[in-house]
Length: 288
Image (tube, rainbow, N blue to C red; front, side, top):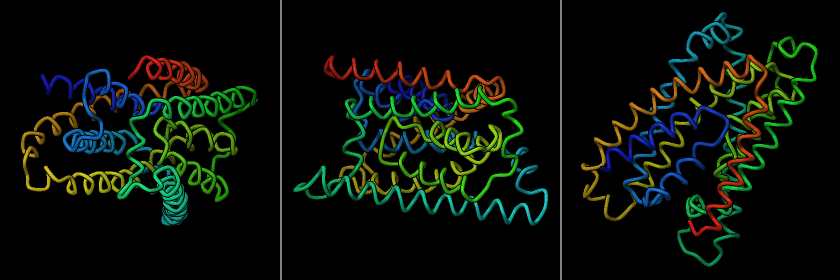
């Protein structure tokens, strides 16, 4: 039965991680509805593996586009690498600063407090989803007003990469504030084309995901009843199986995302996030 639940979570993670609708919010809600503890070491291991599966889905799907965009020449590679490094550094600095501020203020007086303690609170996920929805909706409507949206910003600029990196930092501490939704929307609002924003956003995801996986793995090792290996072996197979299914679901989600971007339907993801925010708030009020 546990494996069936893991497969359900894998499909949810694979679809939601790569669509701009916040996988964290969807997975946390699903775990609560299924009676699982999102903060348990076993579920932490599963989450790490699900993120690994979607990371490989991104690499497979975008490899040809990245090769054309970033590896067509040495100069193009150097410029793209510098922009990716810049955005990632800004993400790390900004995100870590916000996390420390929250841990020092919201958990004042609590020893060994971590930002993850807030991740299962639906009353915080709902407004984060709403904020992401408004940003996506605004970017999508702005795009539809342009006479030639695809011709805008064929080359990503330092200013655009900086904005994307800073906004990505906001996504680290706030479950529900979709990383892909926020970064792609920021790129579009900054004048980059839809394709460039999408390509750059998921390149950043591949760079960022190993660090996130490492952070979650360290939390897992520190867990007292997992550090000795107890329970870890039993969780490995379901976690690996979940990674495979999240990989397959991720490929499907990426094709869906790209087709909607090309059709100018980006704003619809914003509407979905606003509806999802209302549903999550309703679940919170219902006692979940």
